Image 1 (tube, rainbow, N blue to C red):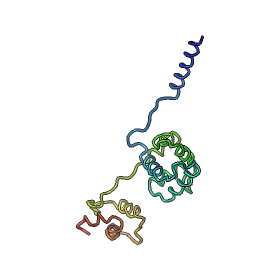
Image 2: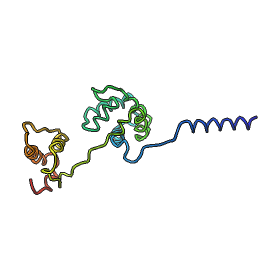
Image 3: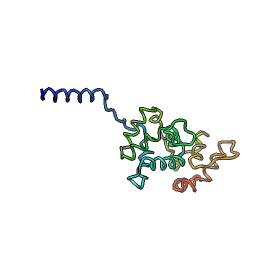
Image 4: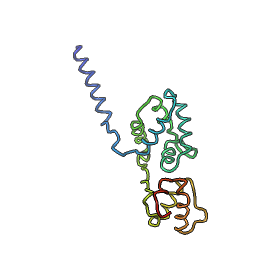
Length: 181
């Protein structure tokens, strides 16, 4: 009967393993904003023994400085002031137990698939890009990433002039490398 008990224990364990479904993991490049942002955030936590409440405070602070896709990620997890949902504890609690960020992102994906659909925009190489060939939308995006705007800009040439004017400040290496400035 003891052997039978051990056998039934194994069959219960096997059944549980099969019921929990396949262990998928994240594919290469999947959830890139989540993995990258949380990876940088985790590295920034000075006190590695921080509890989930401390981590949550730090996360809210980090998210207040984000732009673009990282701000959208913060919005999705409820770490921005205008967020509709609050899943921030789905991040802070596992981080307090040092759960790998890809595992956290994998779990977030199950709760909200949009989180893993976020991708970083391809970065323009400002040393070589022909600004005249870019769309106004892309020129505006460059200024936006610098935290600048172009008040009174109506023509494409206005945006190009503003970018070339500000490039030494925000992208000095690119400004030095360019011959057309």
